[in-house]
Image 1 (cartoon, rainbow, N blue to C red):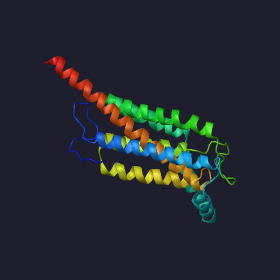
Image 2: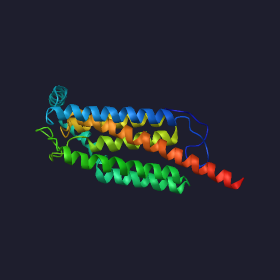
Image 3: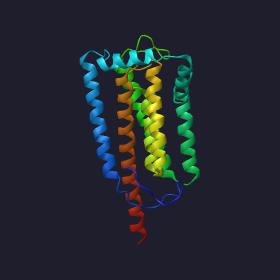
Image 4: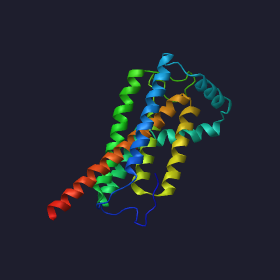
Length: 226
């Protein structure tokens, strides 16, 4: 879904038709289907860890060392509730300052929606975390909120700013977050995978819908002016 452009990354909003919208919608629908499928798979065993979950948790335990644990706590803290609120507010403010209200709305709406979906869902599912968790111990393991929010922000910014390096940096950040949450035994592998699907679904669908709304508002403005 990347598309290079010669425009600076931060310019005032202006009418344009983004041909990535259909692709984003398709990706969002596929991610939603995968999320639901994974949710049903986990539910089949009453929320018990899958065989792949146990294998990955054992592998993380076997690779444990003090330095890596410290490194793993960095994304866990930065990507926590307070960290993500600060990042979301700061990003929204930057877009508003740059006179890009639609992009500010996109960031704010995406983060709000992914949290409003993920947090209640995790509480309802109440899946137990690994017994050797070094972080949270509440039974709210599925999906991983850290991973979902990290993915949402990464994909949203990459779609808005249209830079390949942002896609690359975002991918590294999301993978690091997924590793961090499983290395600290705060989540099963299926939890962070579900968070990835959730984040991709929310980011792509919200971006596409806001782009449609923005384009239609711009078209109506042109028609009224004419």
